[in-house]
Length: 214
Image 1: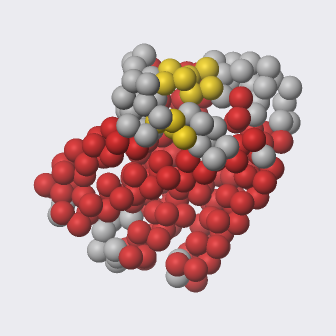
Image 2 (image 1 turned 180 degrees about the horizontal axis):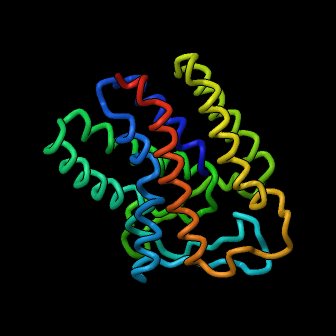
């Protein structure tokens, strides 16, 4: 899931207008921003299937810190405390809520590879909507678009819909298989693409919402 996470950020921005929009925007993507760093450090493991561009064929073998419910919550709380000390407690709490929402949305689409505790031999879950990639693609976009239409002021609806559409189309090949092989070939280029995607989307959405936050 990609743009669907930002739908949650928009809800939090609407509910907490005093919180800088960039906080929930970065928060909802925090696990996928942390994950590439841990991949490069060799702490978490994943594998690309070079013969398939489909998202469901990426094997997340171990990501107990960035994508487990319990450990990622603890990490987000630490970051939230830092944010609270520099800004205010509400802003820190919003970051934590945004970050932990990532796991629950991922649980809808992931295969049974999402750890609950993050500890060895812990239970892993996933509703496996990725096994129906085209349905996943449509549902995620509808979810994003509906949230934008329902919670975003009219002046910002069009640019955020355009941004969401562009971001969603970046994932189109991972759903429809436009190429016969995975363009990334290995996990590290995929990880770089992931972190760039989440950071850039957050920055652009924040730019759009700057006036709304005031």
